[in-house]
Length: 355
Image 1 (cartoon, one colour):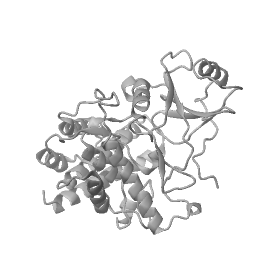
Image 2 (cartoon, one colour; image 1 turned 90 degrees about the horizontal axis):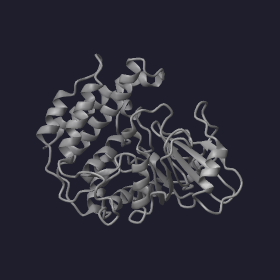
Image 3 (cartoon, one colour; image 1 turned 90 degrees about the vertical axis):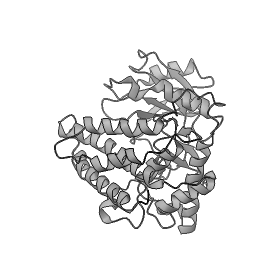
């Protein structure tokens, strides 16, 4: 079994012209010979990701989906800039090589970055890694350590001070997701009114130390060292990154974090091995984060509930497309049940909260 993340044949209709790519890259990157072998990574529902294999070096090409319209949702230049400038302060993001704005080359804007070869965990930890509970705990702590390290990056020194607006970040997120949810509402979807009202009532002031927030920090977006899988060597998917409240980033990650004691319906939503023996619970995760960050978090219920609401917004936007026949993918029919489950989870947190 291959443990490193594998590319496969390119999906029909998403092919790239190897000769055109080769000519473009050789005009921007020295030392390349031959023609690249091109394959596609199967993951990812937003931008398309390809592996370019030369004899001397491997690259990854990212481009928007075919037929995309909204440039703001697939801003290649912004993602390239983040990788290019953040790499000095946070060496776990891949090195970016070239950004092409000429859509005549492959039919869309794109950028090329280094390929970080390693292991990406999905729903389970492969048995071949031989990670017992103790080693799994160390992996979990390493995962949180990298998040704290990102949040401690001096974004001004990296030249990313204008990446986002930290003032009013929390209220913009709450109101923005409430607005997006309302626009994606279907007749069978819950309205989330008690949760939205509670979030607005308990909304904290702006964080005193804004940070670079990844906004999609999960195990399937980090790369493990094949020689030492407790060590994280790469962090991927920076398209949602901005400057904001680091605890909102924590809340987003906790919303994806299904722990071992969660009931069966919640377990069915799990997409990462967060329930494996040795993984921290959500409470332990937040406590370890606070310890490593040197802060106290008295209102983690707010941030976790926000994360659940945001996740419901993402799920409902996808379900809206299915409900209205804009996608035929039958997997999305189940998303309405996930939305309702997330609302139940949020109400349980609120009912038990001391805030």
